[in-house]
Image 1: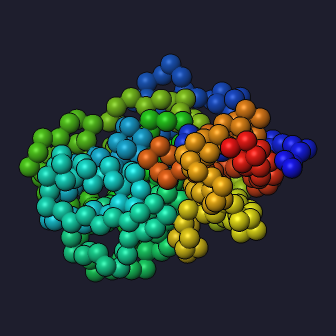
Image 2 (image 1 turned 135 degrees about the vertical axis):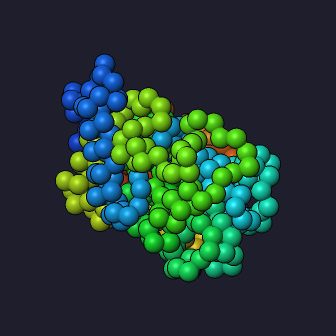
Length: 380
């Protein structure tokens, strides 16, 4: 017998993995101070961009000797900029355990054609990071947005490495404690844990990364939006708010609102606590049911932001069709939006648990997930 519909609905049913839910206190009026219709190179625009950089540093606890820049084209643009500008000086270790990491492998091997060793793992698993050669450059994602897996810690990355570590941290920043002394290049976007708008990326460079930029010139031509140096020196303006191309000052204001909210609730520690509580609510739910499980069986590498789930009931004969039906039913009820697994990932669900999501909404959604499962399995 199919259970009746739950009585309580999430106040906010937005569980998309990007763009993600806005901070819980967000309202449109918060953007009224945006410097619209003004040049981003005017004093007011520059001050807003610089404020975004400095608040990022404060909330993420980025060391003062690291450079932080706002760059075009979201996390993708930031990571492409880093690869095209810095790789090629030495061989590369390419690491992939989900779709975005696999994309970086394609760019290095087929586009840049650099000497590279590729290390891969299946969705829900992770590469042995201790087995990598850190005297070569290493490119990896910290948190697999599409696989629900994250690097447990940076302990295995040697302090005396010769190569650079290039880390795509787009669904980890602001929810996980990134080890800045082990990361030479770190990229992320505003639309993940902070719930910002698209098209803007963040590029954080260690002193070692700056040294590489100023001492090495790639063999290939660089498009204007990838150029971080001029005359062999870092373009400091990029890291002080003078962006390469025109940013959306409305999106900048939105990011500032999110950063100020993060600071007001206690900064990074509070953000991590919120994400952990959200993920734990789902882990507790799946642990007590035999029809659904975390895609990552190893608890130590489970993501606390992009929680990926798989259906395990033996009665399901077409996993992809069943997962889509459950996601569609949840959306039709208005209780969980955009929770289908990523198109390249195994069939299942992906529920965003980043810091802007309220645990009470996760807890209200889970009985609906059970109802949707029972409804679909009865009709399947």
